[in-house]
Image (cartoon, rainbow, N blue to C red; front, side, top):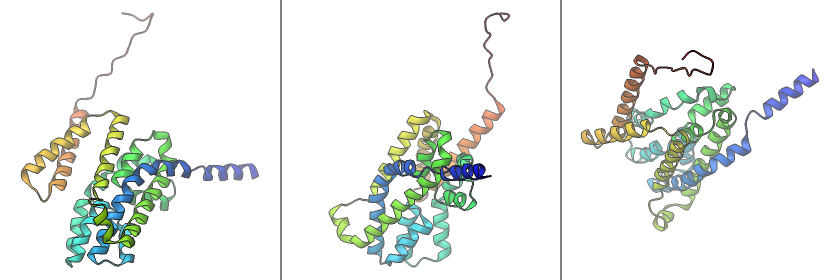
Length: 249
């Protein structure tokens, strides 16, 4: 009985690799810190209180949506309109959990949090990891990444608008971070199809609209993926069996 409980305790302690998760979150921190500080500065300039700035990073936790929230809050936009815009911006997150379902923690609370905290950057880091490591690292990486973002927002609010005069265009750091993570992910999986449909979708969307480019591009990407999946199901690859020595030629 003692041996069994000791084994269970060891398994529980080794369920999440916090030290490795912290190391994996450092590259994300390099982008989240300046971008989060920029958000805090903009929130302070927009007139939001400190507690509201922190709560946006805790409860919403979506870089692009948080930036978009600031002018909407300043303009006094109705909650329904704000929710619709935020839902459109974050539509892509619905699909992020699908390839990582097997990597989610077993604990229901931890699983729910990981799905909530699955940002673009966290998704990129997780999908670039080997499959056996994902389950032990998903909760630590998700928690550390959000912590960087929340702390950065608080720092930016405290420093205020003077920082934006000293270091302009801080928010562009998030774009740079995502480009780097996308490149690392490509180096890991070596697949050209996602990059191809992303570029093609962006080009097509930009020809039809300037206000909803991201939403239209994401929708086109989804359609291309569905068409490719349907085509692959109708035309499965032929399996060839190599004949070894001693088999009939």
